[in-house]
Every structure is written in structure tokens, then in C-alpha cells.
Length: 97
Picture 1: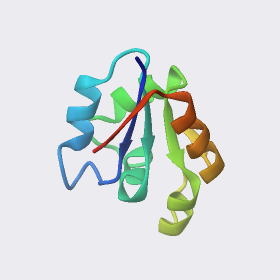
Picture 2 (picture 1 turned 60 degrees about the horizontal axis):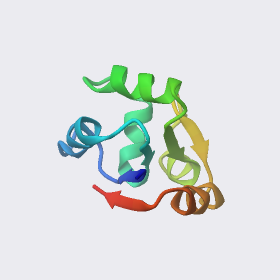
Picture 3 (picture 1 turned 45 degrees about the vertical axis):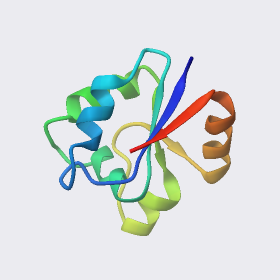
């Protein structure tokens, strides 16, 4: 069963991203939203893992949240609200972190 994981906090605020990456299966996708979009640009200890996830096509970053924060997406696939809905429909479950 595939899960869409959504994270809304910066990796500098919580350990949610680290915990999520540790629990994700190979069928799961990750969507960074709200302040978590910072993780798609900033260099941090989990950046390499996110880059690998992006290389597998399993990391998405919500475009409106990037734009609201004036951040450019360095890794991951840009995702609109329509894309967000498509991801929710694609996965049997969703886990918000």
C-alpha cells in the first residue's frame, strides 16, 4: 500500500523530515508543503537523501508555497494544487507530519 507523506515544517524546526524518510517505503511519495519547502533548497543533513528521493521521482514540492516564501526549487518536482490532488488520489493513504 502506497502512502503520500506530507511535511509542513522546516527541517530546522523539527525532526519530522528525518523520521518520515526513515519510515518511507519504496512505493511512498513525499510532498513538501508550507515551511517544509525550505528543505528543497537549503543544504542540511538530509539534503542527500532528498536528492536521492528526487532522482527516483518520489519528491514533490508545492509551488505556491515556494513562491510565497520567495524560494527557488533546487530538487524535487514542482507541484501545483491540482498535482497535490492527483497525488492524494494516487495513494491509498496519506500521512501528515
